[in-house]
Image (cartoon, rainbow, N blue to C red; front, side):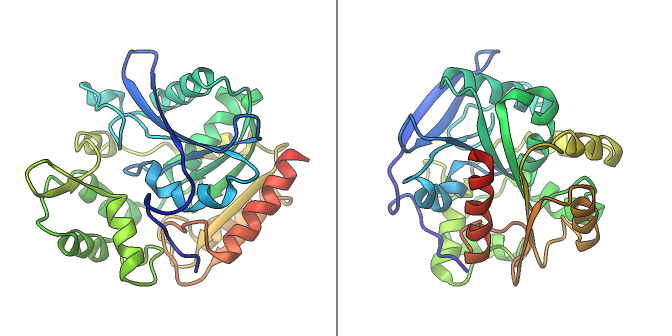
Length: 292
């Protein structure tokens, strides 16, 4: 498994803040040279740009890596209206980020929710997406996988120590891509923040959980969005222990798009870090196809 690193190691980045169309302030990390080919990294539902720091630190010599925080996560402002925590709004925010940074097109790496947003980019902004790497998500999302995430998103708990915060992560998501205590600490520091009173709290707006209480998009719609990307380079990474992406669904995805690169990462659940050696090999091979 590839080693996870925190912000105190690896590549430097520029922190941007841009305004969404409705005025909400969005935070973006920008790695690498402005003239390099762009890789846009889209995170999972509760996640933020810190998740992609290990991967960006490896890609930065050849690529410009841009990682936005969705509204309500990380360095971005919380939305006063929870109903705006919606994929259609996230897509508009992504378009606003690309416009603000003068990015005409990019290869997209999408983890979980980010992968589904990548599907939708094929319809919403087809000229801007050069290809999509889908990290551990598909058009069929088992109900059993959503329950722990709903509980975690609505978490309003406070934790006195990093050990307590790590214990919470390990209890809910024991198959995260962590090999040792150092990896778990990196994951925890990408999940929690100091509340200013000596406690650690989740680094997102708990109101996001109200949106997740609603039914997910239909599988038929997601298959249609996935198929919209048929002419672009695709890659799929699956954690072998994933509850979000079954092997059966991944096989259907490969059958529908036979040219899609595929890797299954042993001993990892949802979602691979993408710095595992097998993942990285696929990432570089897919990026070569996107720029070829």
